[in-house]
Length: 499
Ligand code: NAD
Image (cartoon, rainbow, N blue to C red; front, side, top):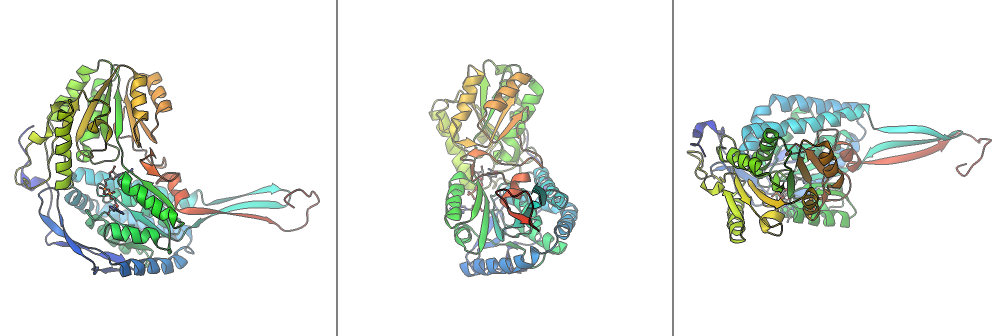
């Protein structure tokens, strides 16, 4: 590790404490429920406070969204998309403040904050393109008989989002749902409430009608009330697997459509023919980006055969990263302590610590933050905690196997199914891995194989509860119904079973 960056270079600070309000019926309200301080992962100091919505405020929010839906669904799709395109201009105008806000509250680098806003804009662009694409179709299915389908919105839709992408994950859902004519209630993570407030403010500036978009602040109680609420038609959720499963059960149990994305334990398979520079860059960026707090982050490196020269380069490159400059902080103290305990446990389980991030210096002036440097655990057994449980931090666990099929067997045994990547120069190896992977997303020489739009995002197994995907064409199916209309306008001579 090199010397730390200068404190003033890291992150701009708000001039005054922020207050995370809820947007209910088009007005910001300081909710009457419990309030708590929100501290920046960078230095542990308070940025502002969050005010949890009461159950009456949740109900009021749903009622306002239901009322607004009646008009919004009748707004022509081109007008809805025009509003989204105005929103896009505002997001680009405020790219820097949004990126800084996401970094300040989630601990990531400002450059990573910028990247997440841009990915959110990509989803918006897909949503705005719906005005010219899949919004219906008709066919003469028999003489004089026409079948038609129309896409129709569902009603009040809800998105519950995690801490690690305060802008991007809300943007996976908001534009597609709104473009299709739904009203949308965002329940952001109670750890990162401020960037979502900025999104709400920009949507207001873009002219979103009152109640069509709402933000409701809070934690578990608010989610439970929304998931059970009779006025809500569909729930999208992104977060840990345990909560994803329970929200899915609650929402579908009360008759709603739900898609709930969960946690991950992503494998990277490295074979001896892998290109060294592509591999080292891809592996290091994958497990250290956003301090490992990405559902697509590399977590287990499966070393096939003798790839030691590559591994040595990975350790060397990761060891050069500087906290605060190349890597951000962990979300909170609980996360920090969970990870340091997991590192201790890996060692006591018999694995080798090749790079110990606990020794990495915090950036000067930011010693109160939640810093952990890149950590590499080697010679782990697949059954060890660090090789099979989601740790959600900059920790890479190396498991060594003799063959590609053993590597694939190991991936298939994982309870999670978000992403699998292979590093190879062989097309046949890449094809075999893509065929055999049990994950929803596969990378070839890409450490973070997030599909770009319109290719949709979603995993398998305990990384996803529900069917379909959350973005792209999957998002269109999630947030709409197909209405099928079969019609004829006169008696036809050639009668059949449809006549
Ligand atoms: P989390 O599950 O703790 O929280 C997610 C959301 O659920 C938040 O809005 C939170 O307020 C709410 N919540 C928390 N506990 C709840 C409960 N008991 N009942 C109802 N709602 C509850 O997740 P997190 O710590 O914010 O985010 C990290 C997790 O999210 C990791 O597991 C990561 O892999 C996962 N994640 C997955 C994806 C994906 O696409 N699969 C993307 C990003 C993050």
